[in-house]
Image 1 (cartoon, rainbow, N blue to C red):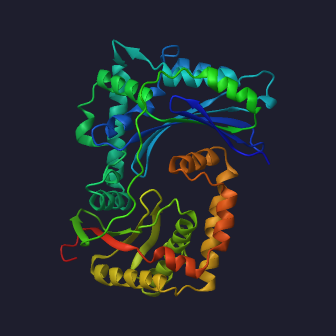
Image 2 (image 1 turned 120 degrees about the vertical axis):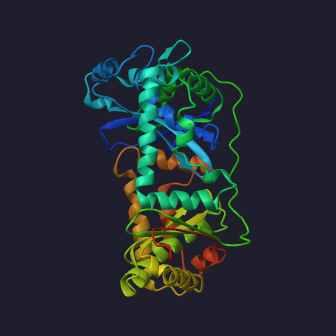
Image 3 (image 1 turned 120 degrees about the horizontal axis):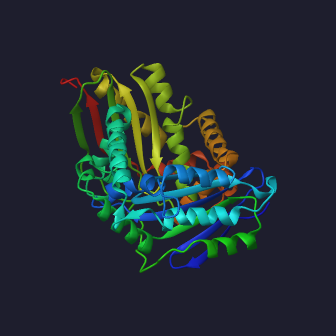
Amino acid sequence: MKNNKTINLGKGINLTLIPEEKFKSNLVSIYIQRLLDKDEVTMNALLPSIIKSGSEKYPSAREMSIHQDDLYGVSIGADSSKRGETQVITFKIISTDEKYLDEKIFKQVVEFLNEVVNHPLVIDGGFKEEYVAIEKENLKNRIQSVINDKGRYAIERAREEMFKDERYGISDFGYLEDIDKISAKSLYEHYENIMKTSPIDIVVEGNFDEEEIVKIISNGFNFDRDEIIDIPRADFTKKVEEVKVIKEEMDITQGKLVMGFRCNVDYKDEFKYYSLFVGSNVLGGGPHSKLFVNVREKESLCYYIYSSLEKYKTSMFISSGIEGQNYDKTIKLIKEQLKCLKEGKISEEEILNSKSAIISSLRSIKDSIGGASDFYFSQSMGGTNTSVEKIIEMIGKITVEDIVDAVKDIKLDTIYFLSNNKEA
């Protein structure tokens, strides 16, 4: 099996090659890192859709589509996401592997992506007003959709309250009140600055000749670069002085309870982090978990319940849908199950089921093109660079004692409850 390779292209740009012969496609991804910042997060959320709407050479959706068809139906995607305290803007282009075609197109594919990313459509010093207006409305709808999805809204609000004085509390969707302040010109000027100063990762996944690909990528992208910003590592430890309790009311039928915990584990200590990961799965990772069995099944206190980890802040959230009258009892029982986990009261079946679920999820990373690109970019971003295979091997070795050591410093930080029950 060929190994992944990362090459520094200079000027804050890294190229990662992921050889994979089982797909009939090749994928090129560009990851642009920005520190989460309230002053620019809404602009960053707007940019992906605007950039892929048109370029200097292909100024309309029709002309973009015709050229994509000329390249055997290449597909372009763009989005922004939050990873720890970093906002990542991503552009992707997926094309048919040349061995299935009568001509070589990869060079043209890279040139097309470069055209879209480095030569966006600019009119009178700004993005096209029409495109900006459309994407502003789309972003407003996306933010509103989070508010309408009460489970998701509750998690976002819990994060916002728990990390109120930290970058992680900033929403990567942006803020409704900031959208109308953004002009086509100011947005373009911001994009120019981003492209000059942000760390950039280019990841190529698929079946390719390494030497040829490096040459095509090196010559195909013409990024205009300046002094590159530093993306510092997010703080992952914090002493909890007092548990915050936030209760909000809304016109809903089912209460949403979210409990946020500080885990105080360094994710760069990979064995300890993955021991924590297994512990979180034992606690609330699925039908086999302590929370599901004891809170949902035995006591019938909730409609759903699960735990999830945020790697770069090593924080854990437990989310549940409950009736208002079950608020106190549910919290008490969740605390009891966490105490059992800390005391090592973990059955052989619980640990085996958790490991099996995690390993199955890790193996599925390579089931479709793009999974490995995102995984290895995240590894690189965190400075860990460990392969899927090594992580699976690590998880196989984790014992109950390892889990106890990893979860011992978990502390409850925030309780957030969304309901329409004033008595809750």
